[in-house]
Image 1: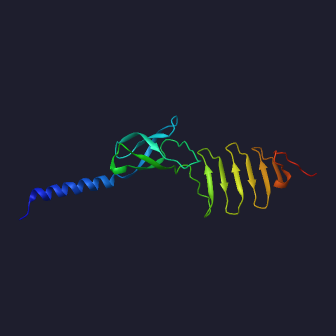
Image 2 (image 1 turned 180 degrees about the vertical axis):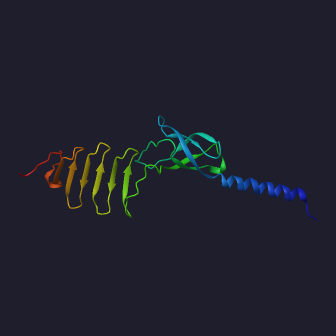
Image 3 (image 1 turned 60 degrees about the vertical axis):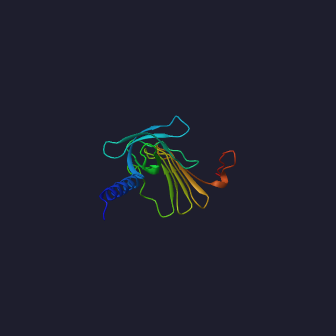
Length: 168
């Protein structure tokens, strides 16, 4: 004989478990950042009209960022509890570079400054002001200012104190 009360309770139980599983991971829009505490805390807009505040943001050791509003977050909610979230990743496609080759790394910001570790073992640095530093894998480098002036030399002409020796 079928007990309808047990069937209803089982369905309700599984619906509750399913809902909690679906709430474990969420994408959201970053609205504000608080950078004054030991851990960065953020506020996000998640599900329709859901604002979650004081979410702890995890970052890699030795690398700190302060993202701009409207970046996208990936947030984990242990046990599906929306009050206990942790942001584990923030990306901002508005500023993401698309010129990298396989295996390359680039540190960049919203205004165009960057450090690019290239696949040819060279390092390229550019600031928003237009200054550019290019260290090639053969030990040569060039430094350009924002007026187009350029210095080209080798790393053997620079000592540990930062003095540059140029043979004329």
